[in-house]
Length: 593
Image 1 (cartoon, rainbow, N blue to C red):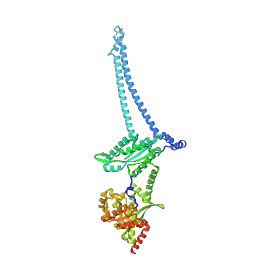
Image 2 (image 1 turned 60 degrees about the vertical axis):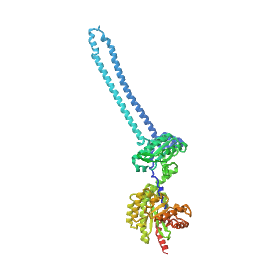
Image 3 (image 1 turned 120 degrees about the vertical axis):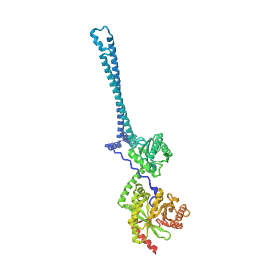
Image 4 (image 1 turned 180 degrees about the vertical axis):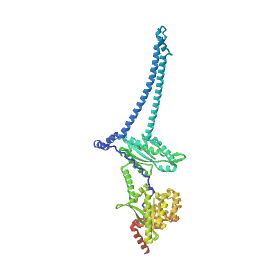
């Protein structure tokens, strides 16, 4: 069996961070700096000249100065109003003091009597002065209220703008800075060495599927609080990019004891469980680290490199840290390019089947073939180990599996028509293909279209595919058996190997993985395992086939252990499609002789 098992399936590639558009004139400026300055000084100059950082600083200073000017202007209006009221009150009192002797002077001439009457407290002049003073006081009072209202309105406006500015630079769920804020922060570093860790919560999609988005949001908030507390203790800053991805920025180089302590603290803080509404989850983080500006001075590229390291940590099983290297980026680019080429290969019919014969040990007869997919790109055959994992990640494995099933059924019909022999062809079924809701209807339509005997088609299914959703998988297996198909468990012994479930599987055959056959020797551990699997299969009434048989000694030892069938280079290498018919005819002639 050449197709990789479920352990080859890794997390889906996250999308690459978008590249920042370089403004007009940047290329000329960069070239000029490169011609006259060394790399470290050039990075500092480029960061200092960054348009975004410069404009952010200018805008902040302008906003602050404008705010202070408006407040000062309104305070000046209030002060002027209060001063005007005080001056008016003082003026009225001064006038009263000045005319008081004239009003009280009794030896006044008859001609001045009318003026004295006007100056009295209830006279016309005094009444007019009081009215003017009251009007001034009311005007100043209204001006004061208006100024205070304007101050409150402007304060509320600035507060709203500050809130909007905060929201524009921070994640609404956790309150942490988001990707744009991180990019601005990186541009402001001006070449100072920092370590950046990109962390992702492992198996976060399962949490959402099991407990819903509300639970997942609460979990993200809890993780953000943990990371912020832990990072702050080691002079770090925390940002949330999206989903379950966080960035922690440390003012330490990536290969120092301070960075190592900070990394260990991050992993330690994640060990305690998250509990919400009686549900308990133990979160863990996959971490990818880069060093600024050693691994790149441009934020978008730096994050892309960190993501490449993160993907490597995920593929290693998660809950670990990988520091970026150029090889990681090259591997990521290779896989993305290979995925695009694989899509074109499907459209151009570049995938072809080779058939490896299987032999029955009891009478050395040919019992069938295993269909193995190959990718012919030009004159080169690409191994399934190179493209099947990528096909499983991208979902292309379903389209490839459908194509393989169709061609295998057509080959069965062709061999039946040309030889009259009942030749069984086994086809590997990927876990993602087997668990697809449309898999069973496709099989039914294919059998109906090709009109082959269902017993001529054998489906090889890995233990991982069956154990991932056990009950639904068992139900699916019974439906397939009801159609008359043969079923086998592929690579038996390398996965779960649950005996309690094995007795419930309606299978015809167990295939012993080649890793046990490769080192098969008398009285070895591999020999004991193979003998136990053969005995188990026979006890359950299941045939056993061993793959990877390459020597006469291996074949004879398997025969001595009562193995039913073998497959491997000793009997035959995988055959191109054109060589299958001659091989079947030659084997039929040998058996008849």
